[in-house]
Image (tube, rainbow, N blue to C red; front, side, top):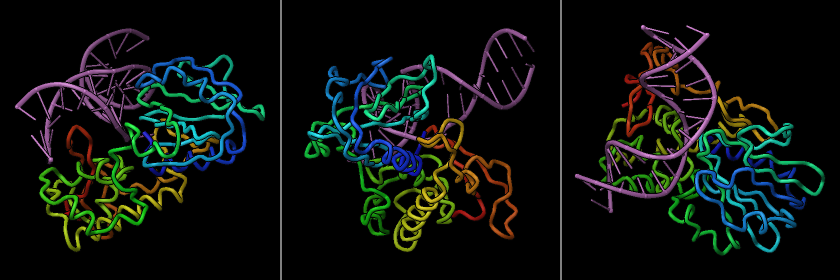
Length: 275
DNA sequence: AACAAGACCTGCATGC
DNA sequence: TGCATGCAGGTCTTGT
């Protein structure tokens, strides 16, 4: 599951190959992704020219002429490719034939991803998937004071709070772990204790780790690839994620990275550096 | 209101 | 080799 940096990497890969092209044909090999597609999904898109490829949190927003916007979430294993196989693979669920003769294929083995249509840009904020989202972590809204305000009174672990998309939209399991390591904060700490300098540190760490990951072209675990098929390199930059038992990267700290479960998700951290 | 747990679905690594 | 188990980047829904 791509998190914000991976979705942004996909967006950047798609934009130059989509903008200005027309959607000549939409083939639905499987109309039931995670959720049912709108009944007129193909009809609404067919013939329309693509004018922008945007992103909100982990959602891709592909804007077409006459205002229709295709919303696409990659779930855990969704990916876009311009090199369709013949015959189509079992998980190639949607294909967009473009006016320049290229074909964009959406594949998603786990089918946790989904798509929707938004009628025009004024309806974005009312979309069922977007309306409850919190701030963009790379926007101007993220600050220590925003974090301390939002986390006030919350007893859930700060790690779990970072995954709450209503507070900050776009952080997933990897970058929640990585941001807390950079901020030297324990993932087990109660969210309401994040205030003052701790909150400032966390806000900075979130922004920095996401920016670094985007600059590296996203990470790549098992299923992710950019739209051009290239792999991201940020996984080489993980300092705690999936490093159970390995030595902490902090100079002089020889503590082993620990893995715990929080709210059903794995958390990785250094119990010595993160307080 | 906040929080935890379950549900959704397939593929892969691991251990017996 | 085959099989069972647990795990995976997310989000929505249900129940306390």
